[in-house]
Image 1 (cartoon, rainbow, N blue to C red):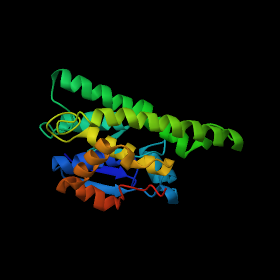
Image 2: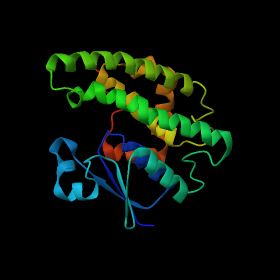
Image 3: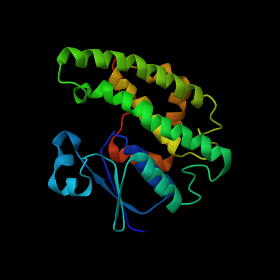
Image 4: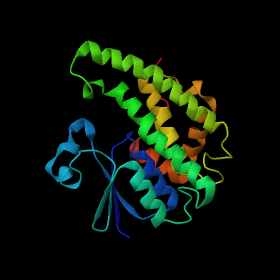
Length: 214
């Protein structure tokens, strides 16, 4: 299995990046510098015409979108603990993963890039302000889930939910939200980032877990 992951430091691509390291998989990491517009290069658009990260290349197959990549890795790397193997635990983990991806993540997009939704500057300011308040509420929902971690969000093994929770909490700092206001999620994120395998991804991306400046 020849794997190559295109990721951008600090982006949602941290989720598969951390999972590949956790699984001990052999893969080629390829950094995409969004601030330099590398996602809009001809070579990258040939891989993903949407110009987004992450992209996972598995042999001759190109896979995009977080949920699809997580499910693919879970199938290809059984026993890695990416998701619970079966039963209601798996169903609940998929339920949370989908919610993180289709609700929490897009809410942050409204905070970070309101220009995607209107070209009116006053409207952009209003969108951002509303989205920040909503994002804080959603982090509160993640906090409730993290408080029940035993010891990880999906059970005994660290996996996709923990990686996504870390990413979403970290982004809160860019929205002016102090991650330490969510102690269970902050503790979970610190524990997850300190795992030797995950620490390799953190170091490669040069991540600072708390980007809140007050």
